[in-house]
Image (tube, rainbow, N blue to C red; front, side, top):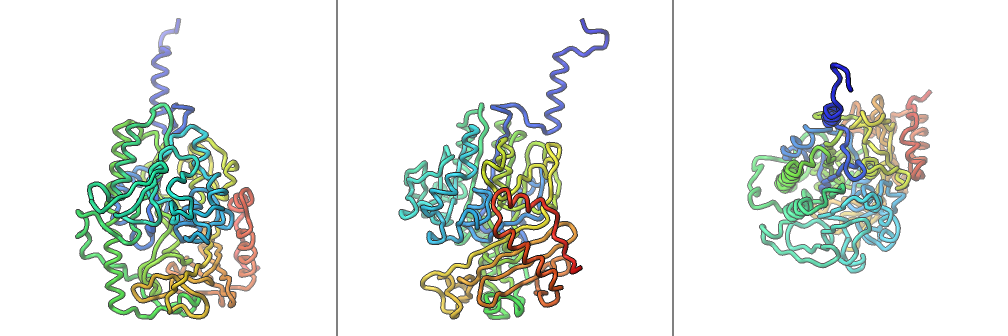
Length: 519
C-alpha cells in the first residue's frame, strides 16, 4: 500500500508521458523512430531574397523550428549537388561532376555505384516507408540513363520527373511506369501534382511504421511557369540592385571578366522579369508546404516529424554582370536556404554554425538511428546542433566547395579559345561556364574568420581570395594583399579537403581550425 501522499502508479505514468511530450523527446513507434520530410527546391537562392515569397514556409517551419543562416552547397550545380544530398559525399567522392551523362549524371557508373548506397537504402532497412516525387537528377529517365523503368533502390513509392525541371508537358516515372502529362493546370501542374501525391501517400501509409518523404518541386528553375492564380503577383518587384549587381570583375577569373559592363537596359529588363517569375513559381511551393504541414497536423504526426526545407544551390541575376545561372564560387551561388522543425528543435531559433548539403544524409540517418559511417559520408549530422538536448554537437572550422567546368557542343561564340561554354545563349550570350571554369575553394567560417580561398585548374593557376567580414559581396580579390604564409596554409588545407574521403573528411570537419596569421 502506498503511504499517504504517494502518487498512484497510473498517474505517475501519465505525468511522465506528459513530460516527455513537452520536452520534445521522440515518442515510441516502430522502434521509436521519428518521421522525416524534406523539400528540395531547384535553384532557390538565399542571398538575393529567394525566401521572401515563402511566408507560409517561414511561419510553419522556420518560426516553429530552426533557421540556418550559413547553409551551403558543396557544388553550385543541380545534378552533382543532388547527388551530394543523396550520398552525403563531396563530388570528388560520388564522382558526379556536372549535369551531363558524360559528367556521370544518372550514368551507369552512378547507378551501379554511389546511388546503390545512398541514404534511402539505409532508411528502407530501418523499415521506413519511403516516398519520392519531383525532380531527381537532370538526366534521369532517359533511355541512355536507364529509362523510366529504373527506380533507384530504397524507394517504396516513386514519382520522378524524366529529365530537367518543367511545369507542364513532362513525363513521370511512376513506380517505373511511364506517365505523360500535358498542359492542363488542374491535372498537370507539377508542383501541385507532387503535393497531391504526397498527401495521398500520407493518407495510405501504415501508422505502425515511420515514413520518409522527399519532395523536389521544379520551382524556381526556368522556364519559370507560374500557376494561373500567381501570374500577376509581384508586379512591382525588380531584381535587387545592391551588393555585386552589375559590378565589374576586373580582378576575377577570366569568365567573370567577359560580360559587358554595364549591362544593356534590355538585359536588366530581362533579369527583372526572370526575378519576378521565379518568385511567382515559389508561391505554389509555399502552398505545398502549407498543405503538407496541415496534413501532418490532421494525422497527428506533426509533433513526431522532422520537416526540412532547402534547395540544391543558389542563383544569380546580374551579379558581376552575369545574367542568370549558378556554377560560380560566390556566396549568391553557394548559399542555400535551410529551415528545419521537429522533435527537440526549439521554436524560432537562428543557428549560425555552417551546415552543408552533404550533412543532410547523415542527419536523416542520425534521426533513423543509423551511424553515418555506414553511409561512408563525408558530411556530419547536424541533429545535435538543432536539437542539443539529444547530444552535443561540433562546429566545423571550414569546408570545401568544388566545381568542374563544363563545355557543350554548339557553344555560344562569346566563349573564346580558352574553352567552349554552355549552349544556351540568353539574354546576351554571356559565357557562364567552360572547361577551365574548374575550381576548388576553402570556405572558412569559424566564428572569428570569414574567408574564402579558391584555386582554378587552368593555365593561369588563378587564385581568388576574399575577406567576407569586410567585403561580404566579394568585390575585391585580395590575393596580392594577403601574407604569402597564409596563402600557403590555405593551399595545404585545400589539398587535404580535395583528397579526403569518408571518415577522413569528417575528421577534418571537426579538427582545430587553420590559424590564419602569418606568424
